[in-house]
Each structure stands twice: as structure tokens, then as C-alpha cells.
Length: 178
Image 1 (cartoon, rainbow, N blue to C red):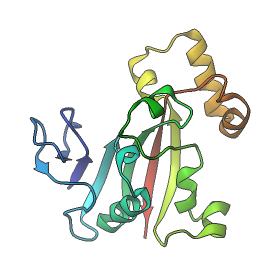
Image 2: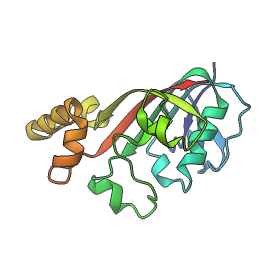
Image 3: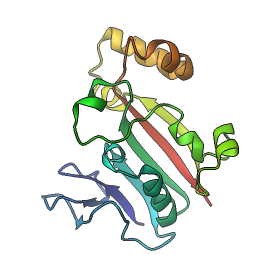
Image 4: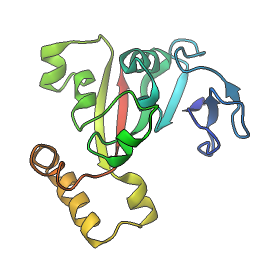
């Protein structure tokens, strides 16, 4: 079973093969993420944590992830939320993400049906605001309330409140559909 952590840096996900442009400890394969060194339909699971915002052509990346994935492959992609302070302080960030970004690839969603930017398809199984804060239980009371509201009412949060009470990240859980 081939499980790949693209852009792992020094914190490779346990049980995954680590691929990164940096030749540092924990990286199993040094490779630039403008192309993906795997055969079609060869990868079983993909983890990409805070990488996609650094890559100049996210559409091409998504198409490559789909190409190398088997039907049903689970892909987890974490990115800074577009309203986040962290999205804009890093000079290497070139892309920004909101709750609907991956819906352009989900054939069940009107964005995908209407726009058809790409032939690749994924089901957006779930997305979570500030996953890392939930996992570490480090969010304060107010932060927790905002996260709960955003999770329950993501479009209302994004349109009406995110500029006042910005959250930090989005983690998308996708399933490859071929």
C-alpha cells in the first residue's frame, strides 16, 4: 500500500513515504512538486499539509494527484484559510483557499457541473476549520465558539463573519472519483 506525504519537510506523517524538495531528515524522496514521480493509479493515500498554497499551479497539482491516485484514494489537503493572518505573512504563499475551493472538482456540486475547469473529479467528504487547533485542544473559549459556528454554517461564516473573526486553516478530506 503506497501512502505519500507530499511536502513533508521534517515532520513526515507516520506510515507515509515523505516527498519534499528539501533534502532533510525524514524526507524519503527529494523531488520538486511541479511533477509527481508516480505511475498512473499507483497511490493509495495522500497527505499534503500546508503545501498547496506554495505551488504556482494548484490546478495542475490537483490533476497530478488525481492521475497518480487509484479510484477511491483518500486525500487530505490542509491549507491556510484565505482570511487567516498566516495566509498572508508568508512571502512564499501564492494561493489562497476558501470553503468552496475543492467544490469545483466535486461532480455532485453545481460549481463543478457549471464551470468544468478540469476533467478530474473528487468527492469533498468533509472540511474542517482549524484542525490542528482541535487536535491539540489549544483553542481558547472564543476561538472554539467561532470554529463551531464556522463548521456548522460555513458559507454564512465565510460571507459575513470571517473578516471580523478569521480562522487559521482548512483541512479538506477528498475521495478520488474515476
